[in-house]
Length: 109
Image (tube, rainbow, N blue to C red):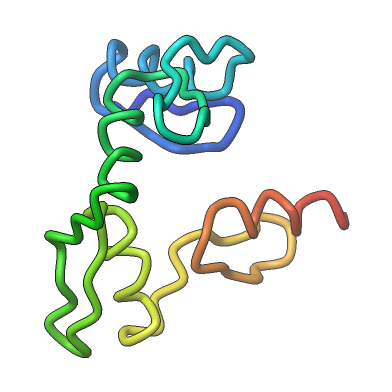
């Protein structure tokens, strides 16, 4: 059964993956970018961020050709083409493309 983050609702198959994810919600961000100073809770997120400075965009949309530095950004972009809105409000049923938009919406109830 999935392990769900109490902060954002994201689910993980492994408890260790949830624990790693939850560090991103914390205040501590020990991994700083040497180029711009932006700091991250996870070393892997810093590595992904560095692609922005290098201009690397290895993930390309098969529908429109737009390229992205992170696979998760490509997946989110593809929802423009599919119309998928996977984050639904349990209270009113309204659905959103991004989990952050759902969280913002929940504050209106």
